[in-house]
Image (cartoon, rainbow, N blue to C red; front, side, top):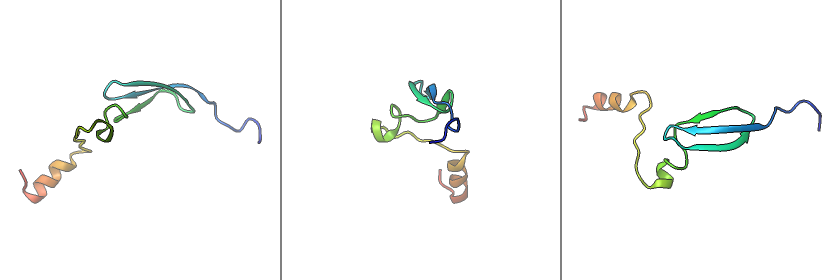
Length: 66
């Protein structure tokens, strides 16, 4: 392998919007995520509705659903 071409692999913190904090290592520093394994519906079994930019409201207005 060539030397001095790889990015620095450093300790980092991943922070979820639910408050979960995960310590790991990455080439990026301080990563923020919206959904982690503690709050993802697949792992929790609880349906959580995530609206991305008002798409649901636009859909309801377009098709007259209330």
